Image 1 (cartoon, rainbow, N blue to C red):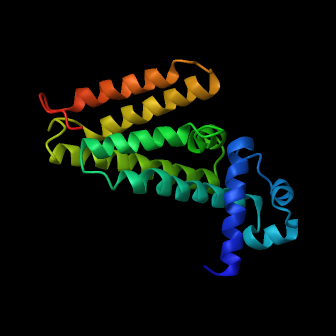
Image 2: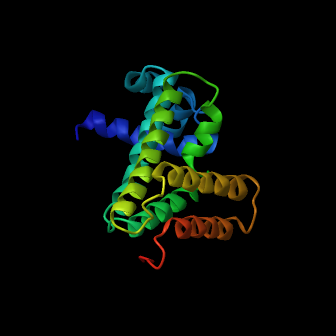
Length: 199
């Protein structure tokens, strides 16, 4: 990696950390300059505008999500073991300080048209596609019922995580973790072929 790219990556890592605390909208060139010790003009050389910075932060969040959640989970056996790994790692991601970046950013950007919202929406759609694909594979592996609708499974799984974020991060509900695990197990059980319980 070239020196310039290393510097840009270091800036993006710091920008992502800030965005999980102050939000995407709260992130500015000036605030990032203070956090990194770099000049505003230097940061403008890397990003050019606040909007470009926001897009880059969403892309950095996606990169980290892929590395921390998807890559390790996809090493697990196909079917239910992989679905469990995807959920568990996604769950760990959402428990980081500041909660799930994507949930928080979605609330910020849902009514703000533009490139940052488009980048965030694409990242969320890509993740939902992966959840749907994992359910489809579980059907082919003989773990899930053949009449299961993979997109519906992904919808309900995503809904459990959104509920967890609200109850845990916002409402500070002490039983939220236990309830989310119970909801996921119930969803998983409803999808399984009877008498087949892969680990």
